[in-house]
Image (cartoon, rainbow, N blue to C red; front, side):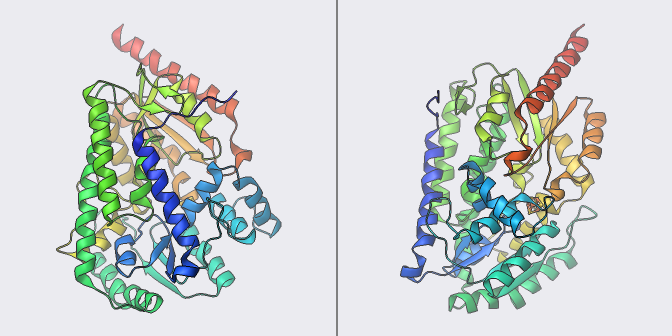
Length: 425
Ligand code: SF4
C-alpha cells in the first residue's frame, strides 16, 4: 500500500519551477532559445543567464532520472556501450539517457547543447564526461580551470587567474553561443538577486541549530537547494522562492515543529546528525524513512554545499562581478582540500550540537569518497562524538542494500545512545 506523500508548499513550488524549466528547454527548438550544458559545482548561472542562455545540468538530469526510476535502464545502455561498472553513475545515466532519445525528466526531449561550459572544480570526472559529450554532439566547449584550494586559501593570484579566463575564454564563448554582447550591468543585477536569495537560504539552513530542528538539512535540504543549484540563481523566481521558504520555515520554528518528511512530521527528535556525502536517489524516500522512523534529523550536511558554500559568509557581490564569480567557483565543496572539509564538518558538529557524523560513502563518486575514512576518524577524535559509516550509490539501484544500511544505522544509533548513557552515568 502506498501512503500519500506529504509535502511543504515550498517543495511543490520548487518542483513546479524545475518542471517549467525542463518544458522551456524542450520547447527551445521552436522558441529559438539557446542553451549551455554545465555542471552544478562552480556553475556560472548568472553569467550564462545574463546572455539569455538556458542552463542544462547533466547531474540534475541524472538524479531526476534516478528518482523517477529510469536510471537503471540508462546505466545498462551505457554499460552495453562499453562504460565500465566503476564509472560514476551520473555519467552513465546521462549517457544512457542521451542514447535513449535524450528525454528529460518530464518525458520531453532536451535540446542538444549549443555550448559545453566546463567549470572544473575539483572532480576529474567532469572533464572526462564533457570529452564524451563533445564527441557525441560535436559542439563548442569552453573550459574554466579553477585552481584547487590545496592550502585552504584563495590568493589574489588564484582569483586573477580565474577572472582572466572568464574574460578571455568564457565570455567570448557565451557571446558566440548567444549572439549577444556581454552586459556587465545585467550581470550585476543578477548577482544582487543571488545575494538576496543566498541570505534567505543561509537563514533556513541555520534554523537547524534550534531544538527541535524545523528542517532536515540533508533530505529536505536537497529540495531547498534545487532552485539555487540548478537554473535559477540570479532570477526573481529564486528570490521569491527563498523568501517564501524562509517564511515557511520561520512559521514551523515558531510553532516548535520538526521537519516534514514524505511520511509525516518528525514529532520526536531523538538524534541530531551531520551527514557527509551525497544521498541515494533511487530509493530516496525509503532512505529518508530509515532516519525519520528513528527520530533522526540531519541538522547539517556537506552535500548541500556542492553548489556553493554560503554559510561561512560568501555572497555573490555585484560590486566585484567577475571576482566574486571566481571566488564562488573556488569555494565550492568539491574544490576544498581534505583538511578544510574536516574543519567544516567539526564546525557543523559543534555549532549544530549534533550527536555525531554519519558518512554516506557513494560507490561511484570518487570525488566525495576519497579520504572519507580519514575524515571520519579526524572528526570523531576532534569532536569526541561518534561517527558512523554507510555505503550506497547515487543512481545505480544495484548498490542500494536497504537491509544492510538499516542494520548499520541501527548500530550507529545504539552507539550514540550508549555514549549518552556513559555521559550521564
Ligand atoms: S564523481 Fe562525484 S563529483 Fe564527480 S561527477 Fe560523479 S558524482 Fe559528481
